[in-house]
Length: 418
View 1 (cartoon, rainbow, N blue to C red):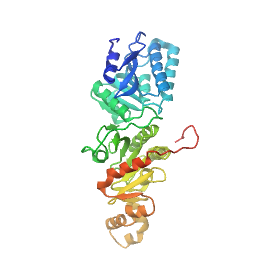
View 2: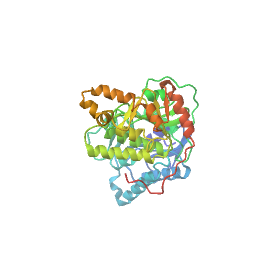
View 3: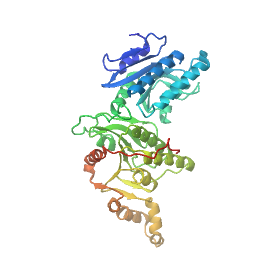
View 4: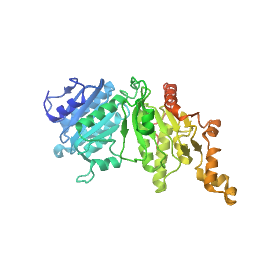
């Protein structure tokens, strides 16, 4: 036991006395080591100084061991960047560190915890993780000085979870580790569950077992929700569009979450309730929607879409369409689905009736009850199951079990361009 501050912080993360420190005699304020977190083998480091060559060597050892063993990495950051006296040798070492983090992205879970200053290149390294958790009093930016605080970071989407203190932050890190598999080749963790506990957290709470739920980017694109949770005893990612317009921010938020889930083959449940795209900056919206539909289309994890109210137009194609987004599409019997927005469909199909003075609102309701009925969509195979609201959780669990052995290969390539 070294007794330094970084060692004491890591002790909070690990189970009981399971933490074993590595390189404890190397002269550095950074501690590294391994142990178990909720019974899961984890490597960790706590950076509590400017990054020098000795620190880089210690961190590189963590990444090397995690790669060899296929175990998650938790990094706690409190650093104002590179040591000024390090020169080009330090820059080269830091480059190796960034390459290691990038190499393991999507291979083993990486979680960054910001506990104090995380500035300059340290901020870049921290932001490469799968999840970024930050203590509210921390600083997280590249160029100093800056007036961007953690809550501002969170509202811009660069922090996934904001916590009050380091104990809470490490507890959230532990929750995320328990929800993720050991690595991208390992099976999902299994949880014992009976009847779902009651929750007031909307559709996510109704579907979830309410054992562990972690909401990502809560302060960003607040009209939609993205959360890791358990459904029927297995980890699932839920994206709830919550009857909002599909915007560039919500598309970016959903895209990031889809990539996280797909990297570890976590099933994605999309609550595809959205009937319009937000008006505003068209180039930005086009780019965001392209990235969103591409992430859905390229994701090979199980994908389930659920329509509980209305899904129409571009949002239907992106979120619920079986061509790109869903292995299974389920809809409540009271919902509506349409390949065009309701307003556009009425204008195109019944222009003559509008010209004859019929009320637009009455025609829109007629369209919802007839051509846009989910039962009509089911007749064409666009929707797989039409269910009553009370059957939702059971049908979702049944679909997850059906898709649990899904295997899908893609064309050989380095990566998609968009």
